[in-house]
Length: 206
Image (cartoon, rainbow, N blue to C red; front, side, top):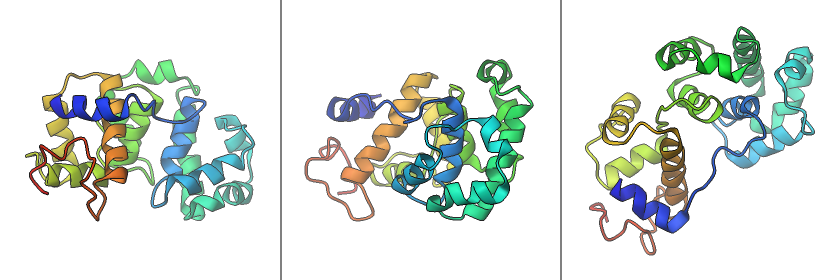
């Protein structure tokens, strides 16, 4: 929490995930795989503000591929989007119906779908459905190594570490992940830029 406080004092509340609906978060979580967010924004813009599960399922597959083409890997991602949307359809596209189920159950269902691994599943769970699950990505793993935190070097170990050392709170998990990402982009990228980093006086990997 001390690390969180130092990051928050620098960057504030980042209000992640940028989307107009929980379903748009799901779409964004798929599209952001193996690409940067600017490309995802281009793909999302092609929907002209109409990103709904009903519309996506009504699209011809080639039409969907054309819309998401800027995000790359559009053949695979089109298939993934249809698959996760059909999963959501089982819950009548209702967020509250999903949230009424246990977290572990919904996480297992997502991981069983094509194209959804740990990071994508946890992003959907946290940002679309408001489940208290911590998202780990390359920025978080790099941060743990450099600070350092004894969080292990793989996804599930780091996830367990954060969840064991933090209050299980959706808003906290949401902003903490966002803060780690923005600080990584500003200072703790592959090439370190430590000057001005809010953690530079405490990080042991200078």
